[in-house]
Each structure stands twice: as structure tokens, then as C-alpha cells.
Amino acid sequence: GGLSIEAAFQEGLPITVVIDNNGGLTTISQQQERLFETPRHVATDFRDIPFHKMFEGLGGYGERVERAEDIAPAVKRALASGKTACVDVRTRGVISPIVAAVTSKRDKASIE
Image 1 (cartoon, rainbow, N blue to C red):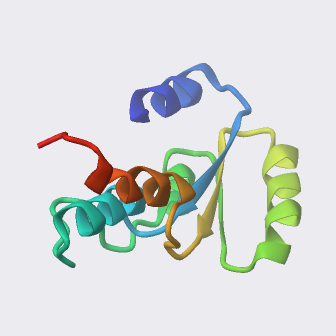
Image 2: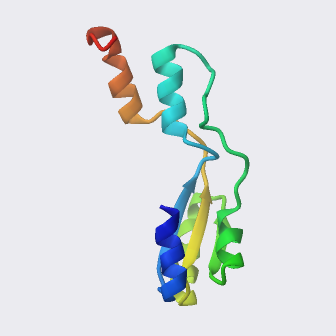
């Protein structure tokens, strides 16, 4: 969680975090949609959070990536920085295989 990142900055640890930034808790949104059969999401959609800027603001290295082919070079730059670093990868939500498997069994289970 967030406190682990704070500890890395406090201790000057040169770790690199790669964030799958899909703008929310997409897996939970998908569960809500499929289980409750509604497009309504509760507390799972976020605004555009610039995680890379947060790391820069704390004195670390941050970089946003929007294309798959840019991930590996960005991770190399983050590791080379020698700082607590973040590669903020913008992704789009796709149906999680776990959500699909679990929710397709809903009708067969007596969970209600």
C-alpha cells in the first residue's frame, strides 16, 4: 500500500513500482456489473491520478507510459535513476478472466 511507498522514500530505497493505471478498481467494477446486472459502479471509478507526478513530488523518478512498446524502456530508465521510482502505465479495463469465471458460476451457486 501507500505506506510501503512512503517507507521506501524515507529509507532512500531504489525500488521501482509499475502501476497498472486503469482509472479505477476495474475488476471490482466488473464484478459489480456482472453480479448485480447493472452498469452502475460504486466507489470504483477514479479521476486521472498522475502517480508518476506524485513520485516526482516526493523526490523520486516518475514516468507515464501509454503504449505497450514503451514499458520496457521506461522501466530501464526508472531502474537506472537510482531513486524510488514509478512507471505509471495507462491501461484500459478489459474483462478479467477471474471475474468472468466467478460470475458465470453465480447462477449455479446458492450464495444469496
